[in-house]
Length: 104
Image (tube, rainbow, N blue to C red):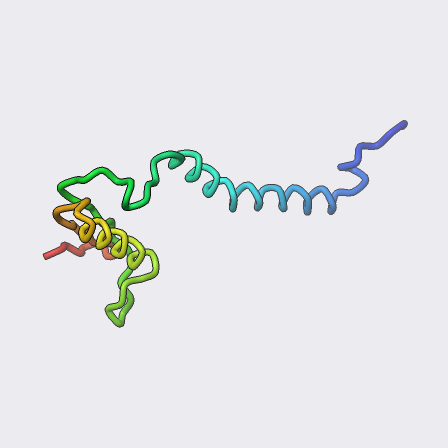
Protein backbone atom coordinates (compact mmCIF):
# COMPACT_ATOMS: atom_id res chain seq x y z
CA UNK A 1 0.00 0.00 0.00
CA UNK A 2 2.87 2.16 -1.10
CA UNK A 3 1.93 5.24 -3.03
CA UNK A 4 -1.56 6.39 -3.85
CA UNK A 5 -1.97 8.31 -7.08
CA UNK A 6 -2.46 12.08 -6.95
CA UNK A 7 -5.91 11.69 -8.53
CA UNK A 8 -7.09 9.49 -5.68
CA UNK A 9 -5.68 11.77 -2.99
CA UNK A 10 -7.14 14.98 -4.48
CA UNK A 11 -10.27 14.09 -6.46
CA UNK A 12 -11.79 17.57 -6.26
CA UNK A 13 -8.59 19.21 -7.51
CA UNK A 14 -8.43 16.69 -10.35
CA UNK A 15 -12.01 17.50 -11.37
CA UNK A 16 -11.40 21.25 -11.20
CA UNK A 17 -8.19 21.06 -13.22
CA UNK A 18 -9.79 18.73 -15.79
CA UNK A 19 -12.79 21.04 -16.12
CA UNK A 20 -10.54 24.07 -16.61
CA UNK A 21 -8.52 22.30 -19.29
CA UNK A 22 -11.71 21.17 -21.08
CA UNK A 23 -13.14 24.70 -20.95
CA UNK A 24 -9.87 26.15 -22.23
CA UNK A 25 -9.83 23.75 -25.19
CA UNK A 26 -13.55 24.26 -25.88
CA UNK A 27 -13.22 28.05 -25.92
CA UNK A 28 -9.89 28.48 -27.67
CA UNK A 29 -10.00 25.41 -29.90
CA UNK A 30 -12.44 26.84 -32.48
CA UNK A 31 -10.58 30.18 -32.51
CA UNK A 32 -7.24 28.45 -33.09
CA UNK A 33 -8.72 26.20 -35.79
CA UNK A 34 -10.31 29.16 -37.62
CA UNK A 35 -7.03 31.06 -37.44
CA UNK A 36 -5.04 28.12 -38.76
CA UNK A 37 -7.46 27.38 -41.61
CA UNK A 38 -7.72 31.02 -42.69
CA UNK A 39 -3.99 31.77 -42.47
CA UNK A 40 -2.89 33.43 -45.71
CA UNK A 41 -6.48 33.63 -46.99
CA UNK A 42 -7.58 36.90 -45.38
CA UNK A 43 -6.53 40.01 -47.29
CA UNK A 44 -6.86 43.76 -47.07
CA UNK A 45 -9.11 45.39 -49.65
CA UNK A 46 -6.07 46.82 -51.43
CA UNK A 47 -4.53 43.34 -51.79
CA UNK A 48 -7.73 41.68 -53.05
CA UNK A 49 -7.97 40.59 -56.67
CA UNK A 50 -10.85 42.21 -58.58
CA UNK A 51 -13.96 40.02 -58.88
CA UNK A 52 -17.36 40.33 -60.48
CA UNK A 53 -19.29 39.72 -57.25
CA UNK A 54 -18.72 40.20 -53.52
CA UNK A 55 -20.99 37.92 -51.49
CA UNK A 56 -22.10 39.10 -48.04
CA UNK A 57 -23.28 36.16 -45.96
CA UNK A 58 -26.35 36.88 -43.87
CA UNK A 59 -26.36 37.67 -40.19
CA UNK A 60 -28.82 39.14 -37.74
CA UNK A 61 -30.69 42.36 -38.41
CA UNK A 62 -31.90 43.85 -35.14
CA UNK A 63 -35.63 44.58 -34.62
CA UNK A 64 -34.84 48.27 -35.19
CA UNK A 65 -33.65 47.37 -38.71
CA UNK A 66 -30.01 47.98 -37.78
CA UNK A 67 -27.48 45.34 -38.87
CA UNK A 68 -25.80 43.39 -36.09
CA UNK A 69 -22.10 44.04 -35.50
CA UNK A 70 -21.17 40.98 -37.58
CA UNK A 71 -23.37 42.02 -40.50
CA UNK A 72 -22.21 45.65 -40.25
CA UNK A 73 -18.59 44.53 -40.55
CA UNK A 74 -19.36 42.35 -43.58
CA UNK A 75 -21.34 45.14 -45.26
CA UNK A 76 -18.57 47.67 -44.61
CA UNK A 77 -15.94 45.44 -46.23
CA UNK A 78 -18.23 44.75 -49.21
CA UNK A 79 -18.81 48.49 -49.62
CA UNK A 80 -15.05 49.10 -49.52
CA UNK A 81 -14.54 46.42 -52.18
CA UNK A 82 -17.21 48.02 -54.36
CA UNK A 83 -15.92 51.59 -53.93
CA UNK A 84 -12.36 50.51 -54.70
CA UNK A 85 -13.45 48.74 -57.89
CA UNK A 86 -12.53 45.31 -56.51
CA UNK A 87 -16.16 44.10 -56.84
CA UNK A 88 -18.62 45.09 -59.56
CA UNK A 89 -21.70 43.91 -57.65
CA UNK A 90 -22.56 43.12 -54.02
CA UNK A 91 -24.84 40.12 -53.38
CA UNK A 92 -26.30 39.98 -49.85
CA UNK A 93 -27.87 36.75 -48.56
CA UNK A 94 -30.35 36.34 -45.71
CA UNK A 95 -29.69 34.84 -42.30
CA UNK A 96 -32.26 32.00 -42.53
CA UNK A 97 -33.21 32.39 -38.88
CA UNK A 98 -36.79 31.31 -39.48
CA UNK A 99 -37.65 27.83 -40.75
CA UNK A 100 -40.13 28.96 -43.40
CA UNK A 101 -38.48 32.25 -44.36
CA UNK A 102 -37.95 32.78 -48.08
CA UNK A 103 -36.19 35.86 -49.38
CA UNK A 104 -38.29 37.93 -51.80
